[in-house]
Amino acid sequence: MVESQTIHIIMPVKDSIETTEEAIRAIVSAGYTLTVYDDYSSPQNATRLDTLVKETGIEVLHLSEYVNHPSPNYRWVLINAQQKALENGSHLIIIESDVMVRPDTITRLQEAVTDGVGMVAAVTVNETGEINFPYEYARRLKQDGESKKRFSFCCTLLSNAFLLAYDFKLLDETKNWYDVHISHKSTELGFKNLLQISNPVLHRPHSSRPWKQLKYTNPIVYYWRKLTQRRDKI
Image 1 (cartoon, rainbow, N blue to C red):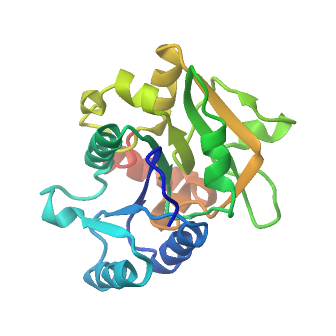
Image 2 (cartoon, helix red, strand yellow; image 1 turned 180 degrees about the vertical axis):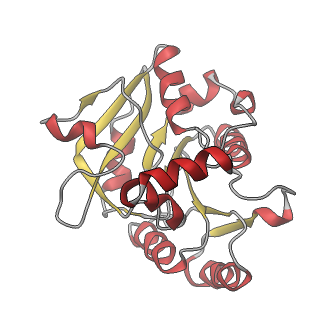
Protein backbone atom coordinates (compact mmCIF):
# COMPACT_ATOMS: atom_id res chain seq x y z
CA MET A 1 0.00 0.00 0.00
CA VAL A 2 1.05 3.59 -0.58
CA GLU A 3 2.72 5.03 2.51
CA SER A 4 1.16 8.42 3.07
CA GLN A 5 0.01 10.50 6.00
CA THR A 6 -1.64 13.03 3.71
CA ILE A 7 -4.86 11.28 2.66
CA HIS A 8 -7.66 9.31 4.27
CA ILE A 9 -9.86 7.53 1.71
CA ILE A 10 -13.41 6.43 2.47
CA MET A 11 -16.23 4.73 0.57
CA PRO A 12 -19.85 4.74 1.78
CA VAL A 13 -21.54 1.49 0.73
CA LYS A 14 -25.14 0.27 0.49
CA ASP A 15 -25.41 -3.14 -1.19
CA SER A 16 -24.75 -3.18 -4.98
CA ILE A 17 -21.93 -5.55 -4.06
CA GLU A 18 -20.64 -6.24 -7.59
CA THR A 19 -20.14 -2.56 -8.37
CA THR A 20 -18.80 -1.94 -4.87
CA GLU A 21 -16.23 -4.73 -5.15
CA GLU A 22 -15.06 -3.43 -8.52
CA ALA A 23 -14.72 0.09 -7.08
CA ILE A 24 -12.77 -1.19 -4.06
CA ARG A 25 -10.38 -3.27 -6.17
CA ALA A 26 -9.69 -0.30 -8.44
CA ILE A 27 -8.52 1.73 -5.43
CA VAL A 28 -6.46 -1.13 -3.99
CA SER A 29 -4.91 -1.83 -7.40
CA ALA A 30 -3.77 1.79 -7.51
CA GLY A 31 -1.81 1.14 -4.32
CA TYR A 32 -4.12 2.52 -1.67
CA THR A 33 -6.24 1.22 1.15
CA LEU A 34 -9.48 2.71 2.39
CA THR A 35 -12.22 2.63 4.99
CA VAL A 36 -15.58 1.31 3.83
CA TYR A 37 -18.69 2.43 5.70
CA ASP A 38 -21.31 -0.29 5.28
CA ASP A 39 -24.63 1.52 5.71
CA TYR A 40 -26.96 -1.38 6.50
CA SER A 41 -26.27 -3.59 3.51
CA SER A 42 -27.96 -6.99 3.46
CA PRO A 43 -26.35 -9.64 5.71
CA GLN A 44 -25.08 -11.48 2.64
CA ASN A 45 -23.39 -8.38 1.23
CA ALA A 46 -22.02 -7.40 4.63
CA THR A 47 -20.37 -10.82 4.82
CA ARG A 48 -18.88 -10.30 1.36
CA LEU A 49 -17.39 -7.02 2.55
CA ASP A 50 -15.79 -8.83 5.48
CA THR A 51 -14.24 -11.27 3.00
CA LEU A 52 -12.82 -8.33 1.05
CA VAL A 53 -11.08 -7.17 4.22
CA LYS A 54 -8.99 -10.34 4.15
CA GLU A 55 -8.43 -10.18 0.40
CA THR A 56 -7.57 -6.49 0.04
CA GLY A 57 -6.57 -5.09 3.44
CA ILE A 58 -9.37 -2.53 3.54
CA GLU A 59 -11.15 -1.57 6.76
CA VAL A 60 -14.92 -2.05 6.99
CA LEU A 61 -17.14 -0.35 9.55
CA HIS A 62 -20.64 -1.84 9.71
CA LEU A 63 -22.85 1.06 10.78
CA SER A 64 -25.35 -1.36 12.31
CA GLU A 65 -22.80 -1.75 15.11
CA TYR A 66 -22.57 2.00 15.72
CA VAL A 67 -25.79 3.68 14.63
CA ASN A 68 -29.36 2.85 15.60
CA HIS A 69 -30.82 4.70 12.62
CA PRO A 70 -31.96 3.46 9.21
CA SER A 71 -29.90 4.13 6.10
CA PRO A 72 -28.78 6.61 4.83
CA ASN A 73 -26.38 7.67 7.60
CA TYR A 74 -24.16 9.99 5.61
CA ARG A 75 -23.91 12.59 8.38
CA TRP A 76 -22.45 10.03 10.82
CA VAL A 77 -20.03 8.83 8.15
CA LEU A 78 -18.81 12.35 7.41
CA ILE A 79 -18.36 13.23 11.08
CA ASN A 80 -16.42 10.03 11.75
CA ALA A 81 -14.27 10.40 8.63
CA GLN A 82 -13.51 14.04 9.40
CA GLN A 83 -12.38 13.11 12.89
CA LYS A 84 -10.04 10.41 11.57
CA ALA A 85 -8.58 12.70 8.91
CA LEU A 86 -7.94 15.48 11.40
CA GLU A 87 -6.32 13.08 13.85
CA ASN A 88 -3.87 12.11 11.10
CA GLY A 89 -3.42 15.57 9.64
CA SER A 90 -4.81 14.22 6.38
CA HIS A 91 -6.93 15.31 3.46
CA LEU A 92 -10.16 13.34 3.12
CA ILE A 93 -11.01 11.64 -0.17
CA ILE A 94 -14.55 10.34 -0.68
CA ILE A 95 -15.06 7.79 -3.46
CA GLU A 96 -18.55 6.42 -3.92
CA SER A 97 -19.22 2.77 -4.62
CA ASP A 98 -20.47 3.41 -8.17
CA VAL A 99 -17.23 5.12 -9.25
CA MET A 100 -14.17 3.47 -10.80
CA VAL A 101 -10.89 5.31 -10.30
CA ARG A 102 -7.90 5.03 -12.63
CA PRO A 103 -4.34 4.30 -11.43
CA ASP A 104 -3.44 8.00 -11.24
CA THR A 105 -6.80 9.44 -10.15
CA ILE A 106 -5.99 9.82 -6.46
CA THR A 107 -2.47 11.14 -7.04
CA ARG A 108 -3.82 13.84 -9.34
CA LEU A 109 -6.38 14.91 -6.75
CA GLN A 110 -3.61 15.25 -4.17
CA GLU A 111 -1.29 17.16 -6.48
CA ALA A 112 -3.94 19.83 -7.06
CA VAL A 113 -4.07 20.85 -3.40
CA THR A 114 -2.36 24.18 -2.75
CA ASP A 115 -2.94 26.93 -0.21
CA GLY A 116 -6.54 28.08 -0.29
CA VAL A 117 -7.99 24.96 -1.95
CA GLY A 118 -11.01 23.50 -0.18
CA MET A 119 -12.09 20.72 -2.51
CA VAL A 120 -10.84 18.95 -5.64
CA ALA A 121 -13.25 16.80 -7.66
CA ALA A 122 -12.68 14.43 -10.57
CA VAL A 123 -15.31 14.89 -13.25
CA THR A 124 -17.56 11.87 -13.85
CA VAL A 125 -18.12 10.19 -17.24
CA ASN A 126 -20.07 7.28 -18.69
CA GLU A 127 -18.68 4.25 -20.54
CA THR A 128 -18.24 6.26 -23.73
CA GLY A 129 -16.32 9.03 -21.99
CA GLU A 130 -19.13 11.60 -22.00
CA ILE A 131 -19.46 13.74 -18.86
CA ASN A 132 -22.52 12.51 -16.97
CA PHE A 133 -24.49 13.06 -13.76
CA PRO A 134 -23.87 15.02 -11.58
CA TYR A 135 -21.51 17.19 -13.65
CA GLU A 136 -23.56 17.80 -16.79
CA TYR A 137 -22.94 21.52 -16.32
CA ALA A 138 -19.22 20.89 -16.96
CA ARG A 139 -19.69 19.63 -20.54
CA ARG A 140 -18.95 23.11 -21.86
CA LEU A 141 -15.66 23.36 -19.93
CA LYS A 142 -12.39 22.74 -21.78
CA GLN A 143 -9.89 22.54 -18.94
CA ASP A 144 -9.42 22.10 -15.21
CA GLY A 145 -10.25 25.08 -13.08
CA GLU A 146 -12.06 26.69 -10.19
CA SER A 147 -15.81 26.19 -9.95
CA LYS A 148 -18.41 27.73 -7.66
CA LYS A 149 -21.10 25.30 -8.77
CA ARG A 150 -22.14 22.28 -6.75
CA PHE A 151 -19.70 19.41 -6.29
CA SER A 152 -20.59 15.81 -5.68
CA PHE A 153 -18.77 13.33 -3.45
CA CYS A 154 -18.47 10.83 -6.35
CA CYS A 155 -14.67 11.20 -6.28
CA THR A 156 -13.70 14.26 -4.30
CA LEU A 157 -10.90 15.43 -2.02
CA LEU A 158 -11.67 17.68 0.94
CA SER A 159 -8.51 19.44 2.04
CA ASN A 160 -7.25 19.28 5.59
CA ALA A 161 -7.47 23.08 5.78
CA PHE A 162 -11.17 22.98 4.93
CA LEU A 163 -11.77 20.14 7.40
CA LEU A 164 -10.20 22.31 10.09
CA ALA A 165 -12.42 25.25 9.14
CA TYR A 166 -15.83 23.56 9.14
CA ASP A 167 -17.12 21.10 11.73
CA PHE A 168 -19.36 18.46 10.16
CA LYS A 169 -21.22 18.14 13.46
CA LEU A 170 -22.98 21.33 12.30
CA LEU A 171 -24.59 19.47 9.39
CA ASP A 172 -28.40 19.45 9.44
CA GLU A 173 -29.59 16.20 11.01
CA THR A 174 -32.84 16.28 8.99
CA LYS A 175 -31.05 15.91 5.65
CA ASN A 176 -29.83 12.76 3.88
CA TRP A 177 -27.08 14.11 1.61
CA TYR A 178 -24.57 16.89 2.14
CA ASP A 179 -22.34 17.20 -0.92
CA VAL A 180 -24.10 20.29 -2.29
CA HIS A 181 -24.16 22.00 1.11
CA ILE A 182 -20.53 21.23 1.85
CA SER A 183 -19.27 22.34 -1.56
CA HIS A 184 -21.07 25.66 -1.12
CA LYS A 185 -19.80 25.98 2.46
CA SER A 186 -16.25 25.62 1.16
CA THR A 187 -16.59 28.60 -1.16
CA GLU A 188 -18.52 30.52 1.50
CA LEU A 189 -15.52 30.18 3.78
CA GLY A 190 -13.24 31.55 1.07
CA PHE A 191 -11.78 28.31 -0.29
CA LYS A 192 -11.37 27.45 -3.96
CA ASN A 193 -13.06 24.34 -5.33
CA LEU A 194 -11.27 22.79 -8.31
CA LEU A 195 -12.96 20.58 -10.89
CA GLN A 196 -10.60 18.34 -12.86
CA ILE A 197 -11.91 17.81 -16.38
CA SER A 198 -8.65 16.08 -17.30
CA ASN A 199 -9.03 13.51 -14.50
CA PRO A 200 -12.28 11.68 -15.35
CA VAL A 201 -13.69 8.70 -13.46
CA LEU A 202 -16.29 6.22 -14.64
CA HIS A 203 -19.62 6.78 -12.84
CA ARG A 204 -22.59 4.43 -12.84
CA PRO A 205 -25.15 6.65 -11.09
CA HIS A 206 -27.24 5.33 -8.19
CA SER A 207 -26.07 1.73 -8.42
CA SER A 208 -26.58 1.32 -4.68
CA ARG A 209 -30.00 3.00 -4.61
CA PRO A 210 -31.74 1.97 -7.84
CA TRP A 211 -35.04 3.64 -6.92
CA LYS A 212 -33.32 6.98 -7.62
CA GLN A 213 -33.12 6.03 -11.31
CA LEU A 214 -36.77 7.07 -11.38
CA LYS A 215 -35.49 10.64 -11.43
CA TYR A 216 -34.63 10.07 -15.10
CA THR A 217 -37.08 7.35 -16.18
CA ASN A 218 -40.21 8.49 -14.31
CA PRO A 219 -39.64 11.86 -12.62
CA ILE A 220 -43.28 12.19 -11.48
CA VAL A 221 -43.03 9.00 -9.41
CA TYR A 222 -39.55 9.99 -8.17
CA TYR A 223 -40.66 13.37 -6.86
CA TRP A 224 -43.85 11.90 -5.43
CA ARG A 225 -41.79 9.41 -3.40
CA LYS A 226 -39.33 12.13 -2.44
CA LEU A 227 -42.19 14.26 -1.11
CA THR A 228 -44.45 11.67 0.50
CA GLN A 229 -41.75 9.37 1.87
CA ARG A 230 -39.39 12.20 2.82
CA ARG A 231 -36.52 10.59 0.91
CA ASP A 232 -33.41 11.96 -0.73
CA LYS A 233 -33.28 15.19 1.31
CA ILE A 234 -30.43 17.46 0.25
